[in-house]
Image (cartoon, rainbow, N blue to C red):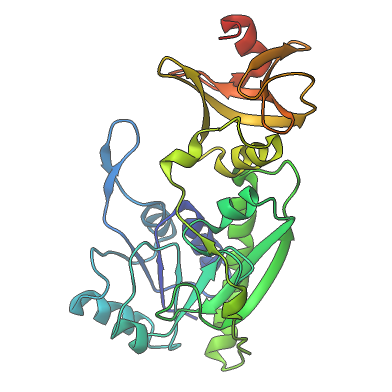
Length: 303
């Protein structure tokens, strides 16, 4: 049975699409953003969802405006059998009349109403949350504020980073969406309204947030490194326009290291912070590949 149109763009959404296609809720149409310049060569490349849809043999629509009359009609026609479409990390605002004409189930990787918005996985890790999850909700005009149809929780390990957490959430999302689409087609969904007063917002990650400020506590910087690894990346200012990429750290006792100072402890580079210190366990020099902190220290010495 077709599950209607699926709208998505990111790697996360591509995983959801793959799981959906293998679940008995195969979409009849995948909708994604047009090709754009990506990677070091800045060549035009298709989105991860476009690549996955072609791999799976699913009809593909690359849309610059899903609210336009022609694309809106294609989405509505693809979703006519079940009366539902689904959406995950798509990248365009869905407006009326599409929003009202085609009910959509939205996959969102957080425990709504906590972390509505653009960067819920990163913000949960940065905040030191012990758990997160995935919600499937009805798409409405408000930001991630629609009623929730299904939710599944998962712990965030104390050393877990985005690179390990996001794929797990995508797998949960694909499974949860398949079950919810089947229930929606049968009219068997129980909707739960969100508590707007409890909402928190996951703002987009700004460039300035990538810089590790040693005036902040070590634990806070540790969580920031986890949240931004490997897709965005945190960095440390070494002075003189030099930056050191930081991939993995461990909070330790300060042991007399001033905030902002780099020292050597047991063959490893250590950064003094406002509260405690960080052992730089894995770093990436400018233009180089990621390496162990001890290897970097042997090759470069302390700045």
